Length: 169
Image 1 (cartoon, rainbow, N blue to C red):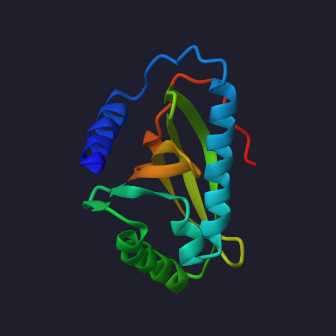
Image 2 (image 1 turned 90 degrees about the horizontal axis):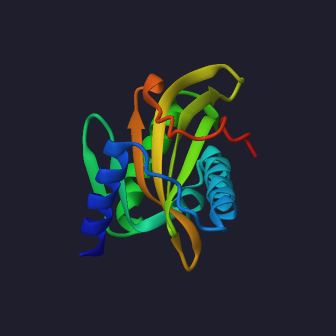
């Protein structure tokens, strides 16, 4: 099962925090492309458009929180989780999300780990909340896809021994 292999790799990457950056000449281009994927995902997520957000998910995709772990073999299986989140955000007057203090590191040719702070705002611009987020992205024939999404306490975003945070795009 490929999703089980993805889960095992995600657990290793997340628990160790960081590996040495590979010496591939394309590493910077790949991390830039993965970073752009994350920013595009945040723009799509901010519209609360279910299909727009789901398009960024790998198949399978895994969500890890302090409450549970949800593995979805397909985007359709992930839809109820995302729909529930969107409904909760709408009830709170949600307006948009931003990804702050992003750190990203390529750990192999087709695998990137990214960590930062998700900042959510109400429609009137008032901050709704912050959470730490860590993502494992996998490069596919369709581009970079989010394979694992981890929510955590805001003060625990991984530092990844990387240069200063990537600017928002």
